[in-house]
Length: 96
View: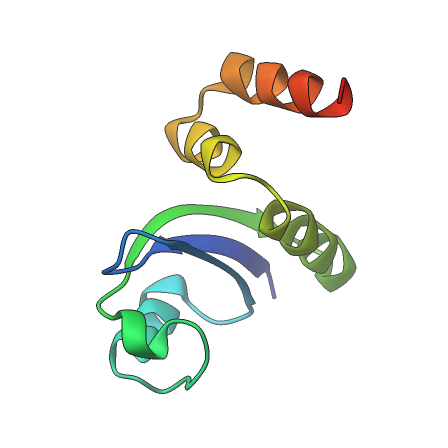
């Protein structure tokens, strides 16, 4: 069964990154129904803006942890699929 790393845009325009082993439509519906009292609960509704499938849970969790540390600009480059911008942002951060 695959694992998903996903990113949603919340009603307040912030981003939430999570991991799921269930169908993503179901997970997003659960967030919007208020099933989880965490970050997204008071920021509903949420909209799925990016996801990636993984076969191993360890890879999915590692990816989630990495993305959660990223700046907003880097997350938005990932959402847009702008790989060149993502590389530039990674270089500018590592130069600091």
